[in-house]
Length: 564
Image (cartoon, rainbow, N blue to C red):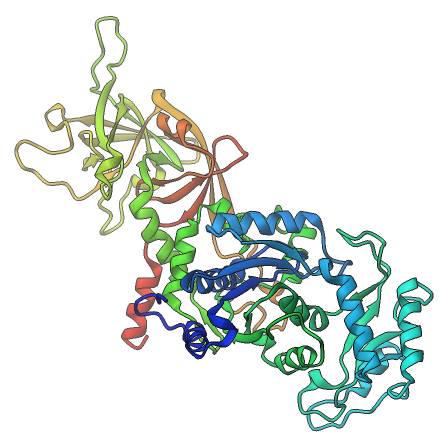
């Protein structure tokens, strides 16, 4: 068994002890059990990582099982997206199962509980059942149908399956303890009538098992040894164990273990709320680059390896905690710094004309080429040639007609370095009728090719640039937090009240060096001085900013260390 250095993982400790004791014969089998009612989000990444890595650490297997017991909200589209996300994260399930594979077995086991006097058909509606369940410190009220004869409940269950009753008219409940401190043991519902087409079984069934009835039994059927869940299922575990203890299982009884779910600041992971964002057009889809879905993060350029590494670094705990989103971004930035090739792109172009740039014998501006390193962090990425001419663009905020204090970039009479090319000095600027600078005129020093002056004079700023005749158009999408509050909804009770109306800015006039046209869909490059950007898979010329260059997490940690 291997455990990541420095990371806590009490689950692996439990599995190791189980193996040493001979429980399950040393066999380890886990499963990732998503409900196909939406796209996976970043919180699911931790569960996927935990399930698969635990199995891998002990030479075991991990399956995917879709918890498809709620036909009203589940679709095949979600099944496909979930499998794609798991594969993108780098994992391959041993098998792919569905809870619906076991509908017939679950039904037969429900009949077995009735025959043992451990379940009954209740004619009360859901609202009444909920009210009779009581609450903490408030006793439950037993259903008047609780002692219904076995044969009558068996007959009614069969008729429920045959479709004789309306939705909600009857349900099957376990007979456990209406006075139990654990509310989940107060005669929970096992089956409900629901006429809705199922994405796999169609109209074959009109009664569907609840999660608590399907989950543990599905684990047992498949041979799961360690059923790893997030902490909200801690209170479900006594019911999980009760169901398994009262059935003729085909093999070992699975063991449920709970761990803390993964939550971040400025993010919501409620599928209901995420679906509302999609349905109401707040975002452009489940894979919108602002969404915390895995497909959205993939589109935005997050490396799967960085997500896995983050999950490893934070370890596995029992107590839920909300992580700063900047901590995840720091890991993403660390990965991209090593892997992303550098490119020069100007997001808000301002024309820079070199008035003393030479022309050839025919009067055409000379074109020069500079050898530029693709990635200083990886020499194997080599170099590229970048064209330079007398007609360039720079970032608009890299020039100030009347520079403020400590502004070291280009201004009239000031010399700066153009990255890898020449030192240039601004002479004057052209403004429009409103006084906006539309062109900067400058001279270059031919003796400074490569960016250094032979006389050793120093400049205080190095700026990126793009040669206009050798550029390609770029559309850049810049992102802010989708939610303004660190804990969305904390103040109002509704997370969507904290939506950021300015979460995305599209820059359609950007330009980049010509080699950007060769960037593959999904590939991430660093726009020098601006951040890491991912090429969109569908829209030509569109790049999504993955993360900026500034390490905000390091700044947060520094402030915390100083007591700020």
